[in-house]
Length: 431
Ligand code: 2M8
Image (cartoon, rainbow, N blue to C red; front, side, top):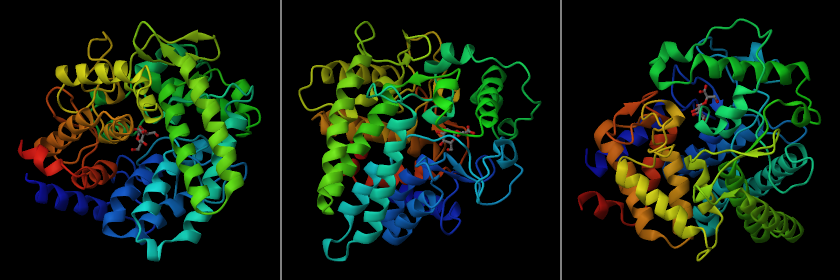
């Protein structure tokens, strides 16, 4: 596939999965709107139609909860092909949604959409109301997921991380009681081979957490303290801070100085708090189990994502870049989701080894910001090699580039468009 073919294929997939005002990640396996999928998809959509890109995020934000939370799934249509559907969540929203959230990439995406528009025809009022809504979501995070005011927020469900079955959650998930959960039938393994998906042990606990929160009527003033799973993830917090800073810059440009100031102050405090997640032995960031107070000994890609918020020359940039380069030496098809030397690494199983283009994109963004441009180029190239070899799949075996998970995948296609629009992608491909 040459770059022109890749671009055409990516655009075909965005159209194929477009439902008019939102996009499904892929038909069959994920037949609804997902939160961070939609936001990242908007970046690729912008190149086809700026108006369509704004609509994608507006549709998501139209389903924000009154308390500020933005759900991880919006169930626009009925579809029996996915578990757990709206009848399991029972969140009572006018359009059914799930009751948990996902990584807040919205802020960083809004800034990009805004900056990419022709300055003479900017959608200022659309952007302004989205910035206000996104700030309310961030306020919700710090109010409901950091009630003690530590500066970092906790995840209450692995699905909130977006990296569902990452090894990072293993210990905390094993502590989640499963007695009395309702019988259920998974649908994901009717679409994708079970060896590429989470295990039954993990699904039981995903369902147990859902049922625990449902019993609390999705009351976010109670969920945090009641949850048997509370993990502080450096990757998730880095995304939140990165978006917070983007929102602050946007608010400044749009004339809301008070909001800009409030967000940048909070971000500065959170960067300091995130730094307590540095794991000196692993030479990267790592999770904290807030329930037990213990550090999690797990070197996943989440611990490299703080590159998104570290300034050039920060003492940890060299360590993080070194690890990333080392992983790429061992697995050249994108950045592994788990340290390839860890005994739990599994190159086929979802978030326990495979590479994901959206994570590569976040790392590239961070690397460029930290001045690591050569390494960023390497990640662009590694990502496009997956596409050349296997097309736009959900994820890839990082050692072989084999396509894994769902096919004709929306956010992967959107990232192809992003990568191909980066200055030197052409030269890199032919190198
Ligand atoms: C995957 O997660 C969903 C649950 O949210 C699932 O497996 O059913 C994850 O890869 C998540 O990050 C992603 O947003 C979602 C849709 O692509 O699929």
